[in-house]
Length: 221
Image: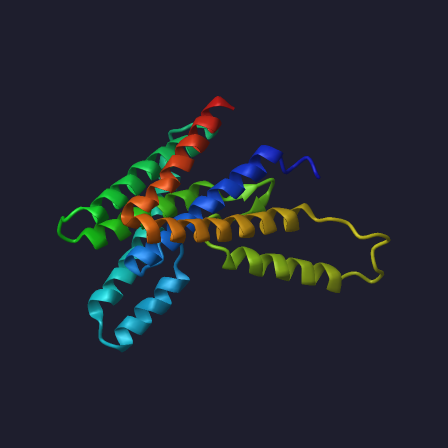
């Protein structure tokens, strides 16, 4: 394994991808809205608009806007902090937002679904903006489409540009990293969906517990 991808960074990316899948699947089960990426919500908003369900369309659009706001906010949070403080700080904010999302949906307050979607979208947007590179490789831990497209394109271009085949098959650390993130995201999505199906909104609290453990680990490293 090349030295530019440290093992702790790999495992951190896998853990955050698990959280991303957990949060996104939980949000869809509980609120029928994706809170970890944009594309799915654009499609859902278009479908809702086509059937004149303007309330649902507005909900999906609010998730998109809040997710993008979270990405921008992560850049402002990063400015006054040292590099070692950024991720623990973002994880701490994520924990607060996810707990607030879970408790608001479990309560009887008005607009609890909207509050849930906004808190979750903001949390995952912050995570996506704060954790973007591992060993010089661009990664996303809340959605997978862009990474898989980049991986396939890179590999296709590399093989197309080779005049002679390589002398021996070599393992690409980028492939292993992105495959690990993909598997972790899918496992997180399955776990999140299972938890909220059994425990409703309180099942979401599994993600904040993992984030607390990751933040403590980062502070000690």
